[in-house]
Length: 241
Image 1: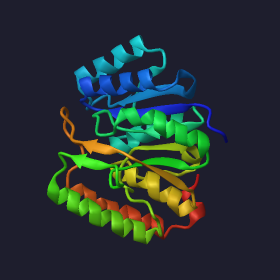
Image 2: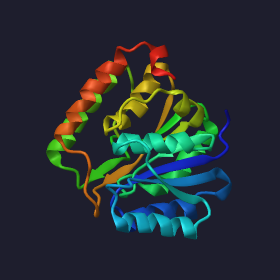
Image 3: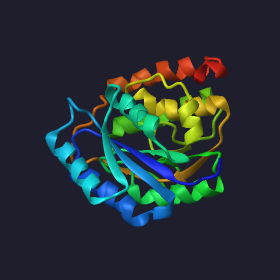
Image 4: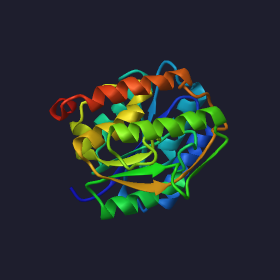
């Protein structure tokens, strides 16, 4: 399917000004004809009142912004909740805390117009990418993990764990997503890799959040290995609905 419009999925938990800045940059810098909807996915029980109020205000201010309560638990469940109702030809996933640079959305869309069948993914490890405020121990572990997963999936991608991608909606809706927690972010790269989908990497700089609390502990990252091996040795047809 050719690129027509993108639906942007933004899970949010306790972000306020960073969520507002993320949405406003996308609205201001993305050509309206290429933007279907920005869907903010909230947790009814765990989300902060301030975050919910921010999402509500943004939806009242901008016609292309809406919000929903997630119908599946945890971070991965929030993404899946957004995937289910997305109507654009392509679906972008990003965060609400400015760790995913919203200024890159127009560039991602440009690449999707040229490569509509491919996944456009952002790399922090490419030459023009980078990290600002990332824990040095976690950075080293992240680098090693990237190399292991790339080798396991015979991939030349430099950043497989960064959850900032623009994907064909048909692909997203046909995959049988299993992970409800943070390994879902890894799933969005390695299931398509397993299915033979091609990627286009663009450079992006990561910077540490200045508000909100990360919902992903360091030790939880080791669950990524379990997910990676499960998907690597699952038959391709079993990865689809």
